[in-house]
Image 1 (cartoon, rainbow, N blue to C red):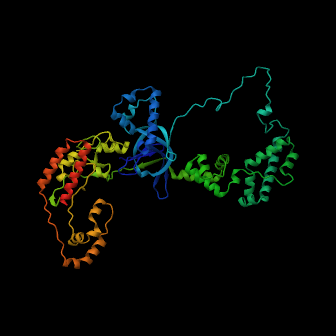
Image 2: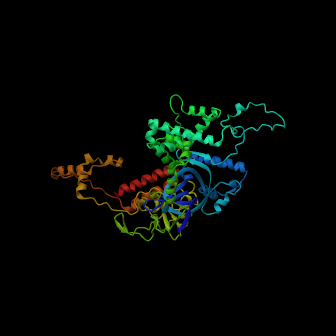
Length: 557
């Protein structure tokens, strides 16, 4: 990866693991942290490998329906290899946001909404190009189509009545269709209306002085006067003036009824300081998704109250200060320098150590020699990478490793998918080539290997060998062989052996002489069994092969 500039709305690769494919994200924000590092707030995209098989079936069904609507037989005509690779280009958009270190960016890519007029093959012809058509919800585990709709009909649009002819009277009752809240042609002049509004503000300030909860929230006269000057007080004053037919004396009397002055408070005054802090925290997490804010942070508030508070909060000085602080920490671009650290999955084929096999010093076979790439079957590459489960000992060439990291799959279906055999020798071939018929991890790398990469010789002490004989009733070797995962308390056995040794020295154990067959006889026996199993059903041959392997292991133990 070469150094480059990354901007807002760029689609990028993020690396969170040296062995897993890159994450695909869209940069929404670039924020500078207190310690000087840069964090990217990103929108998440998911691959097919990241969602459940049930949802994959739904995605495939949706793709088939789209093909039928498009009446494009191109997908049917594509070769299996290209169909396989096209699945790696499909992503699923999510509304989920997360923050990741900008230093984990490994390059740019492109993600577009699936274009029905564009050829699917064109996505394969362009490198680092992806498409999506469905939206994935990680919490609900659902897939939805990301398509807008033209909202036409009575549910979305008003029915327009016919235009009245000249001189024709409208027979509808206007009072039932609308409510008049202010008369533009009233008998008052603007100066009189302004004087009445000043009186209304003064009454509102006095009402807050009398109210206990308001005196706690606005302890000073200046704060009470500022709260009384808000729009809610002016709206109440003008509504009162309209109801009293623009008679100022009657309207003033209505502002101060028999029980005391009327107190009008909006959402900014109704909310407590702790509720305001909760709202700001929720807004930072969910943005303007007020439904989620209500459900997760403020369930006791109505949706109307939350929306009204939001638009009032945007007029406050606190909002302006927060936006100014965000502007200082937010960046429009970031430069990521060259990333040239070696990947831990790189295989150094020259680093081969000699080992001991079956007690004899033998140069260990090169585990990488002759092994083909798991994806493209090539045996030549300037760099190899280990891939897949460790017990399978698979590897990828440099080109296929890059494809795996970017697209989350291999260029061809692999034996892990059960769609084709592996590129290396099969288990039966490996079994015949290995010494004594015991599968050994060499260039063929069978799926289930019984020995480690480097063989070893187990040399037991005399006390251990004596303990096997003296404490046979405690050790129960046959039971232990049938239950290999049950732990054996070796310390207790050795302690019991030490206690029995004085008595055992008086009555020495009679050891039965075991006549071991030569190695040639064992190999000849295995060869006969191999020839016989070729003429029998597969299941029976597998059982006999396992028994022959167990026999050879027990023989050499």
